[in-house]
Length: 343
Ligand SMILES: NC(=O)c1ccc[n+]([C@@H]2O[C@H](COP(=O)([O-])OP(=O)(O)OC[C@H]3O[C@@H](n4cnc5c(N)ncnc54)[C@H](O)[C@@H]3O)[C@@H](O)[C@H]2O)c1
Image (cartoon, rainbow, N blue to C red; front, side, top):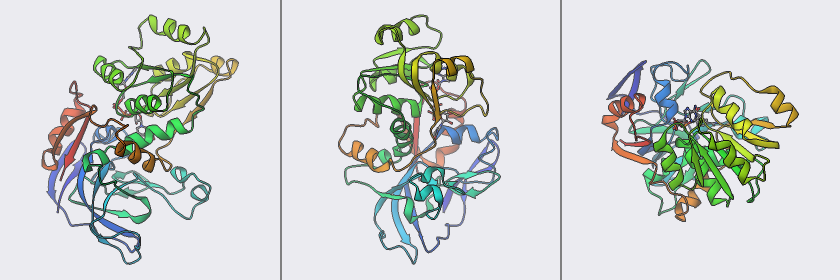
């Protein structure tokens, strides 16, 4: 089969590789669409340590089951599917207690690091354990389904955050995941959504997707606006979707006392925190890791036409052109958001 292989850092090749073998509990999926994730783009230069070559990356995909392992009973060849990016253990304390996203020994498809290597879906075929599969509603396309993963990441963060429709919410970082946070907060009926991003193009998109107010981080009006929306208190919740000290600090400073900051961004392994503000204003800060069962809700929202997957889609292209799309994304070409490749 053909696959886009990261052969060395910064070197992607569209080349022939063997079709993966499947285990008794796995299925072989013929990949129809696969989204390029920012973590793959950042990963190709070795800076994250999570895409150690050689590896077939890719964890935002959809396709058709081609073959099933001996012990697979719920799925058959021809089923249209998507799948979680996390391969979790079913027999694990965390999974049994409703937190499979935190299960020990979890692997992520298309990731290779010191702990594990698991080939992903930039390929004609990918092997996937049956317990992470989800059936596609008939009216959900393969391209839409390839975008479920980042939307589910955003929904997970919202689900673990205190919420009331009267709330004012801040979303710092309106990129791929942040723009889904904006959209999902809007669908949930959040009264005021304030998106903050350096990039004006991203802010325009955020406005289209439901942000009531958009700002660049340095704009003086930002603090005044948030105070005026909240009776002088500050925002009720904030989502940090960049992952650096400056944006963590900004998220915290825009909050009222007793509010919650949910951190999704993880660009920097370590960040500074304004400790006095956190303690004296009793700010709750929590991380949000991946997805914990949010796929069906996102598939429903797409199927019912409530979740817009089109606005963020910049291009659909053949997998054979993957290397050049990676290079355009790596070089931060203006106006490019989500690119979906098709084997
Ligand atoms: N927690 C999780 O499970 C999870 C899952 C996926 C991604 N992530 C992380 O979430 C973050 C965002 O991922 P993404 O795919 O949306 O990336 P992205 O590149 O699409 O979006 C990042 C956005 O942040 C903006 N930005 C950069 N610096 C900024 C600053 N100083 N102030 C304001 N905005 C700034 C960029 O303009 C961009 O729009 C990354 O750190 C990624 O690793 C976390």
